Length: 482
Image 1 (cartoon, rainbow, N blue to C red):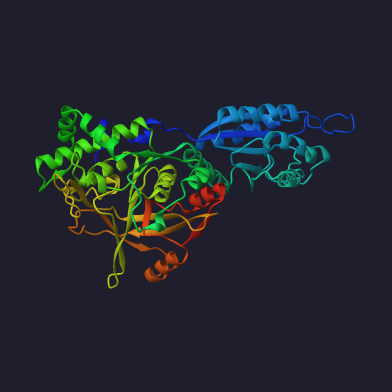
Image 2 (cartoon, rainbow, N blue to C red):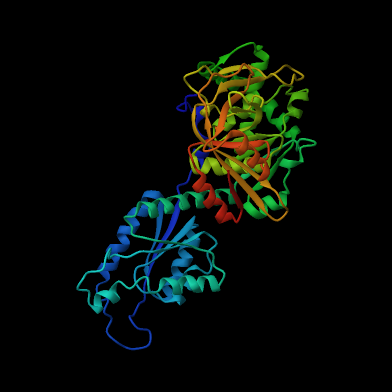
């Protein structure tokens, strides 16, 4: 699918924001808080230059809200207020010299975002002829245990890293934590549209709405089926025809009546309008009502597949938990795909994943034809409705399941899998053949089930397990790696 068309502009680009990082250096305003003596650290440019080097590295990962270097409690409180006003995603505090713990408390006590304490130094190694003045000017590690101790005493959660600003492992850790923090921040204001109801009898994907709000901050917006019908009736005929011309340039429509095609596109426009009006990040829907509706009367797979490819990630059967997993994957990787376990080939050693005609076109193997055909499962009042048939691109993927295994605790199960290069089955649905990486297929699947996985899954390309683990750490969620 060509993303340069106006119709295909990703929804999350409309409200895209870069990571916002609060960065602050800390020191002690005077060398000794008890004795009135000359301050040996009489070269502020030495620390400012060092802090600037740190800032230049962190700028590579997002927008920096700089607090500069603070040395007393009053300055610390001002910078704390600055970070709150700017609504930063996380805070990186770097002692550039000895710091009193009263300063770090004033700086961080009112923060509700992830905090990283970075133990580093402007002096990479100690000189052989080091004198006392040089030692005092670079005495950073001396205060770090004191700072972390007092944070622990006051119940302030933090992570600590230790290493030079040239250390790629440290920078990668910081970058991943910044990405994870942004994903968590997005969840706090995210909205999931809930259409219809949960699938009767499938309780494994049911969630407690209060615990969704309490844990993630995510709002569930109830969208009544009658409301979709109202929006459907208000879609202009000209809009449907314009979009049809665009879609026909992108996809091959086969075996569908003109009425089925037009209804599929009209329904897409109706749900898109609802999504924009409610600022939805995701949709958890059950398709039954659209199919039996006298007004709509078709399966909505085409509409939700297009919306998923625009960044409004969508699940079926009213699955809110997987919708949240899709938002997380979208935030840390740029895109996400919804599917479920379908079949296993025990001889060829792969699992087929799919979900009716619902999928994300951005994941399709563009070297092969993307077909639009009659939805195979559910005939509606006015026909089948359009659905996609394509195979996913091959390559490394991350597979995620998010579930409320206990009333008190959410669990994320994350797996590194591989999408196998292959032809699509003529099933009229988006699909992929996957294998678990680094292990026997059956053993890994048994482990997945044993740890509490469900049949619904969220995917993205690449290995993002390390970032997901950091997301779970910030959210205080159980993280299970398969």
